[in-house]
Image (cartoon, rainbow, N blue to C red):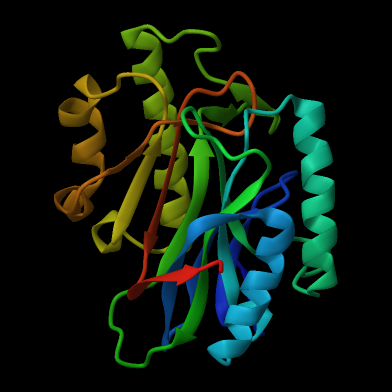
Length: 253
């Protein structure tokens, strides 16, 4: 069941035990705008940039439904928890949490080349009125190769295995996670305007046999490849997606 963010005009899939939602889908009559911040700005300043932009477009801060971050390097589990404490404290100050749950989806990866010196804001998504939009608008948070066992415990698939078979198993897991999320959100891959793949491994042999067939019509719009690592040590692959009406670039200056 999706939870409702009435003030932000979207519903979201709460991610148990995680500091972000798995994804968000705009309410009927609303679309999603994707903002790229160029150049990236350190996250401590990025919060203010988001606040200013939302005021300029006359949308409440609650309309923010996705945030894209870049970090210097993958974090240990303890480092990941520490990072998220500060992140949630800032979002809590925005008063966007719903019953203590963060409705905003997130992708948070570590570029393998030209990584930022500190956590930085890469982009964000927000909802806008769009009654003329017939297709659903959504954001899928970055999903890595973690699966849940029958007791709900999350475990890493093909841990430490970056052989061709290991990478295939990882990608199968990521796509299965996203397929389940898409079904829960009642949207389709066909409607995605952007799909992004984050890894430092050569997974091109899996494009024709696995990745592209899974994406439906979205495959024809191409895959954004980012030579980056997921945010936690031990993870090797991540995929996210969105269906946005508009893509804009704003300056951090």
